[in-house]
Length: 519
Image (tube, rainbow, N blue to C red; front, top):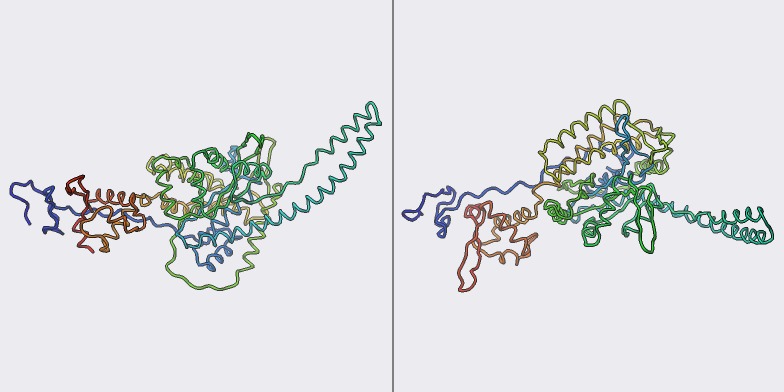
């Protein structure tokens, strides 16, 4: 069909030059629709050789038996080990500088519901729970001894008070001091390794009593992130932000609790999250909202692997030898003899530390030089740039953890452990690229869903927004449908027009005929 006589020249759509491609209202043909932006970028698969030998076979056995990506148990295992090490020993990444890195890690695994995230994390968590139970039993024995000693101290104090009444002069003062000294015996404190649901104030008390640090485990991180976004929880959010590096003092002053002094707040975090809630959270980060404070970027061990399309029924006994190897390594790291491994702690140091060996130091210096150069180009998306900037501490943290796991004798961090840590950072960067991909934009995600339904023939050539959201399709509620339509309109895949109804005009939409022909 030709345009009316006298109409301005228009671009002809070569794939749809019939009456359906002519827009009578604007006097123009439809142009070719622009393609939809690409899907999520590819990520690197986890190479088992990246894992330290003490964990490698155990992690792969978990993955095989559960039939989940090995990335899931690997991240769970590494964060668990990092929380066990805590502030016992750190690393100084420079030859002479006093820059200190405590190997504290935050980890998150991303996957759809049913991706077996929880079972994959529970395997490493059982090892931490085992230490928690042993600490509880040890505490119960210590409390029993303390109570028995308390009875003795009370009897002795009673005798001293009687003697004080009989004595005089210097002897009376001496006996009084002896009685007061008996009041200074502190009740044993239980060693804690993990918690799941706690207030900031209670967490502060736990950290005061456990200066090595502990792990906060949340099976679903969405609830944890949402709680920190609530009005009035700004203090909790700030506390977690400061507890990430594991070196800073923190003091609570609260009516009722009084003053709680934390020698150094050190909190590890581990959990899972689904892509949908994550994309919504990321939208706030991109808009510069409440989430744009670096909290998400602190999850350095964050993975979003591709689920295998194949499934095999694996019904085998766990590899007990591999599990025992991992368990023995964790038990050893639970009580590190810092002097035996060559760690140093001067009077001004808050944590014992070791440095890189000569070849490892050269490797790290070259690696960091490349990282710093990338960060200064200005070519990276701000959120992604903030994420990989924290690899400055991630790489030496991983190198220290790998070294402590595979080199019981200790000594300076080896080049082998350092090279493996660098390779692990490269693997994690591919997952970070997926995390901050524009494809996670909620508007684009909704547009992709609507475009898919249009190509499948689920949508007529002309429709209203209500025709879309009344189906209750994924991501396409009332707000999502409008986001999708506006996004598709910018690509020329749909367009709107007004229909007079005698009252307020109705907005209707029509799909590009090229899309309808591609069904």
